[in-house]
Structures are given as C-alpha cells and as structure tokens.
Length: 226
Image (tube, rainbow, N blue to C red):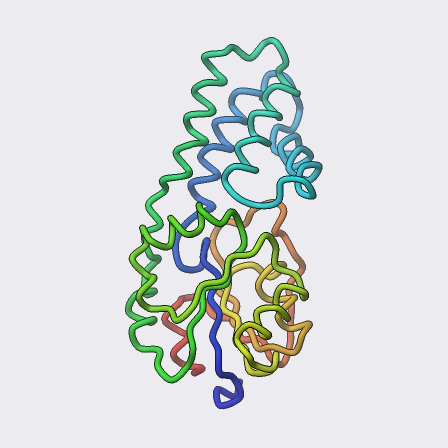
C-alpha cells in the first residue's frame, strides 16, 4: 500500500469504531426464543423479513425493530401476547441508546493518525448514527462525517466528489467486505479490512484478495500502513 497515494481516510462506524452488532444479536436471540416453538429456523425467518423490507426500510435500528416485530407476528400470530410484544419492543428501543464505546485501540490510533483528512463514512439512520457518534466521544478526531442510506459504488463516488479527491486518493477502513471494501475497491480506492467477530446476515460476503486491499486483525495495525 502506497500511503503517499491517498489524501482521505474514511472510517466505517458500526463494528469498526464501536460494537454494534453484538447489541443487535441480543435482540435477535430474544426474538428467536419467542418464535422457536412456531418454526424450524427462527434465524431464517428474520432474514426473510429483513430482506423483504430492505428496499423500503433500509438499514438501522428502526428498520431492524420493525422487522423484529413483524417476524414475531408473522410466525407466532395470535400466540404471541401483547406483553411479549411489549417486552420485545422495549428491547429493540434499547438499541437507540447502545453505549457506542470505542473498540480497543481506536482512540489511541486516531490520535496518532496525522497528515490525512479523516472522515466517518457510515450507513444507517441519520439521527441514530449522529447520536452514536456523539456518545462515542470520537467526533473530535474527524474532519467530516457522511451518513448515507447505503454504501454502493455510487455513494463512494459521491464521497470522493464531496471530498474533492480522485477515488485513488481514498483509503476506506471498515469491517464489512460487502459495504466497506468491495465498493471502495471497485471505484479504484484503497481499503483496509478489519473483521469483526460477528457479521450481520445481510452483510455476509465472499472473501476478497486485491492488490489495493490490506487485511488486519486489530485497529491499531492501521498505523503500519500509513
């Protein structure tokens, strides 16, 4: 990786800067225990609902919560009580206040990165993502924040246009091969992949090998390549 080639480092937020999916999985397990008596594969049932809702609802806590409640009602029907739904909804709403505590090495690494424009580039619901960034205490380390409803090649090209750089001058850092790495490489950018120990079903993606991709295990290893 030629560090003199890029000017902007874009960082994914959820499961790159802080733990997000772990909190979502707790809610998923709540749902699975509720609907398990009524279906063979609770996980697949939720996946089917989320996939069907993606075009209309997109990503984020609210979209996830709707899919959770919808799955419970569709699978369990009248057998799920108002009390059970109330408890499930309350668990979903807790996601709006997840702590967004920076993952190990994040703060120390961001403090040492100098000479590049640092941008948070994340997808999801605007208010929820803004609130998590504020709670994380990391906002002061970034020059800009871009929150989008999705991360495809189009959004990456828009990011480059907003930052007034050529795609080859962008380095994307993130945990998702599907949303962070593949589209960045496709437009000619550089990428660093930091896998998270949990991957959302809709983010599963085949492994990638590429000359402009570096794979690391810990956030602090970024400093070896810039």
